[in-house]
Amino acid sequence: MNQPVILILGASGGLGKALTSYFLSDNFKLALQYNSTKISQVESEDLAIYKADLRKEEEVINLISEVKSKFGRIDGVVNAAGISLNGMSWKMSLENWQETLDVNLTAPFLITKHVLPHMREQNFGRIIYISSIVAQTGVVGAGAYAASKAGLSGLAKTVSKEVAKKNVTANAIALGYFDAGMINGVPTEMKDEIINNIPFNRLGNPKELYKLITFILSDESSYFTGQTIALNGGLYS
Image (cartoon, rainbow, N blue to C red; front, top):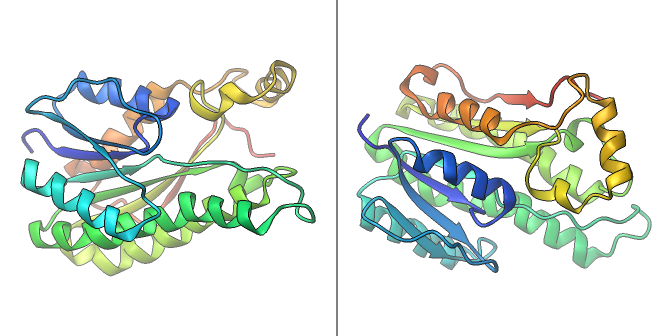
């Protein structure tokens, strides 16, 4: 496929920025979405930047329409937008719970809902949800985050069955702790403890995630769908 068109959601976040830099060095056309934090990349024939609140269906519809209008197609979607509002289960406010689910689960659903008609029409598509090890192990105070990320696995399994005949796949990647994004907000002492518990004794490199994503985006992954892939350095508890 010549210059696949990839839509990256949450491209202004730490992980999104890292992935963007790798995509730019390869043969891809990029549509980058952000909401509050602006993206510093310069737009070009092969790169476009869009502001959209993914919690609002009308803005999602407009985003997909604008990307399709500029590039003519959307081959892959990387759902990397996310937030984590922490609180013990008996203290978590309903507002924080709902906002976490809106950003981490409802937004990927809305993107999926409105990108699938295009992918079905072109008979090709790759949808990738960035999930988390937290959904598999649980972390004290992260109930909303864990629930929202666990939901992505169920969404991927269901979507994969709905669109398999149209050569569209849907997969989730359950990330361990990577040297980008939310880990930067973790206190040094806690970060050191996390690293000590990882069998490889280091944080993941975003390039390792990028290599997995580019495999999923490729034609060679056509039989690979409905999966939740753990990329965590062997850390499971």
